[in-house]
Amino acid sequence: MGQARYVYAVLSRRARGVSIGINLNPDKICNFDCIYCQVDRTTPPELREVDEEVLLDELASILSSARGGTLFQEPAFASIPPEGRRIADISFAGDGEPTTYPRFREIVASVVALKERLGFGSLKIAVLTNCTVLDRPAVQEALEILDRSSGEIWAKLDAGTEAYYEKVCVPGGARFAKVLYNILETARRRPIVIQSLFLSLDGAGPSRQEIAAYCGRLREILEEGGRIKLVQVYTVARRPAVSSVAPLGDAEVDAIAEEVRRSTSLPAESYYGSSAWRE
Ligand code: SF4
Image 1 (cartoon, rainbow, N blue to C red):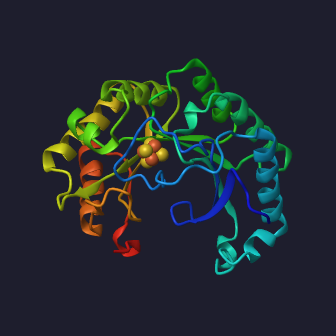
Image 2: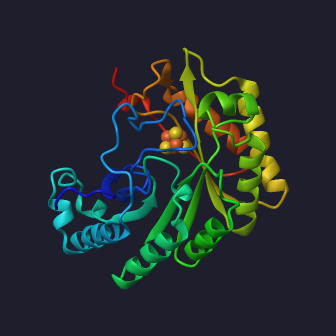
């Protein structure tokens, strides 16, 4: 397969298979500037625009090569045991916030139509989002299209307090209250997944009060009619640009997940970073 511009296949421990990512932000512009972000913004982007025709061709090519088995002969995937040789999901997750792409609704509709045409109708499509613009009508329409075709919203919530949110996510203007409101409204319409990254900053993880406040936010969402199907607690796995950021230890990740389960009764899963961390 030639060098793809917008669509990439990665081995995903979380998805237990190969995940197909779609990057709607090749310009690397994001309305957050998370201190743990993995996107290298020190080098200029190779592309600034999304050519949707090319993107859809790339997606069709990867799906077809998965169906034919050639995808799993590529070096990156050749070690996958036979039972793991499957496409686990498609995810809108790139070098910025996917829902800010101006034609998000249109590209979602095209991706759904393509996967259905190629016989992958039940394949999950996840949208990894920082939730800042989920209140836009066109974005809501996109989510409704996804609701009808195995869509799933993975909503980022990395804090319990505004101060910690500002420190970790460095949002360009989006208030914490708006993010929480958008998560609630989205979760009122369909069950969502909450994705929460906690980290060590200058040698210190989040305080007990921060985690208590974070669990309180989850409870508020539930009490106000939101539905959460899963909370994913994870930490950094690769070194970001900010050098004072490091992963939490596995036990610390587990302790947060346990606190989520204890105080909200929600299912919570841990995803570790330390074993993959490279100094
Ligand atoms: S929202 Fe995602 S892409 Fe944007 S800065 Fe944060 S981690 Fe990076």
